[in-house]
Image 1: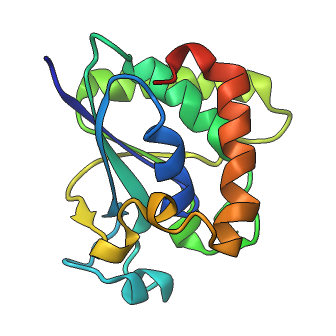
Image 2: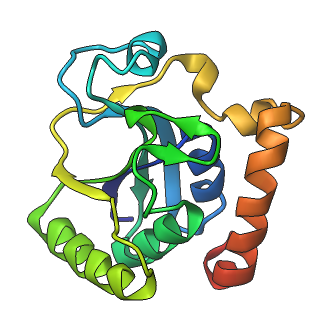
Length: 175
């Protein structure tokens, strides 16, 4: 089995994690922080917008089962890429839309996807494209948050609609 890594930020990492854990070929999804300058940030640090980091997920996947391009398609469907530093009620730079590429091939594929998405949306795509320097895992209580806390009111309002959209658009990619 081959393994590659993808890192995306599209709002609250609880929500993005819940989507990507449902896909075939995903071996792990880890919530964390990346894209900023502060070493070893905490949730509080990132929430205070002093680190430059975004809430992101690191996806380990088997490219013989699901492609990076497939992951990008799901990523763009699972969040709003035209609203700067905001996803729903979550506001701040930590909630920005960001793709952190790990290889030049990923960068090229992401650039093509952004061009494709630019044609789809009537507004400017705000998704940042940046080389991944360092990924910092979030605190343990953030990992698999929705799985552990399915009755959390925030999660109940936000995640089920994303999962329904995922099922409708990408049923062929689901486990």
